[in-house]
Image 1 (cartoon, rainbow, N blue to C red):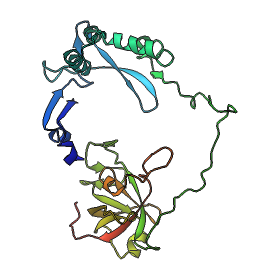
Image 2: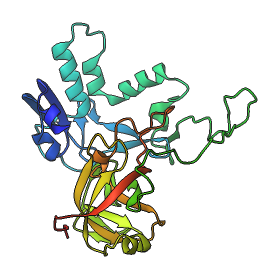
Image 3: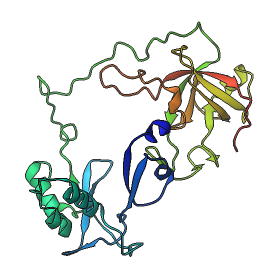
Image 4: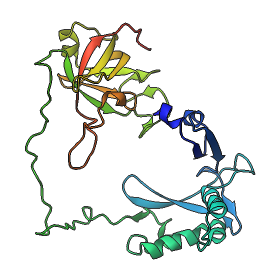
Length: 290
């Protein structure tokens, strides 16, 4: 992706903290630093609060407590409003009023989605936050019979066009470390699994390690075992003996993402099959990273 990204004529990034993605940019690039959520956001009507959604679909209010890193920092709403005022001809949106008082933004959200955001400003700091309406949580089923309908799939695993029953093929699942949020990696200490200082590892069952003539800590390469016309391989992963089912292995994402064909997804939801991919395990010439 980085090669294509650098060919873009223009990239604009709004960021609270510098990271590597900021040095991978288009031919013309703007990096706009902004206030973080922990910093005090003071606008024309005083300190502002923002709203956020938790992983369990509750909306919460958040106020900054720390002094901003610089008096020159703008907030995200101020940056967006400034871009809009500088580029759009239709200024029917009250950008200046919204930046002065974020409560007006939430009022506009409530007017647009009254059922979801009823009394948004009044309730966003209530204990537990505002639960987003979810039919499943409320036991409301939008089905013909008004009940939850469970559909049994015709099979649990797809048929793979593999080159015979190769003994060196394992089924790969990708996963996160404990110090990772989605694809954002905060460190190199996975205390859940006892891996320190690196993410270039592959978790394997002890029986599979022995069967393939390998050993714990050895360096291996992983090659996608489907669509042989396209070579997909990642190299130099250190074997970590782990309590994973025999015939399976696991590696971190996004490091393992290059192994997955774009077409390897569910036909209906289009969800990539990041929990099941046949891969070939082979001894590597690279020294494993400790």
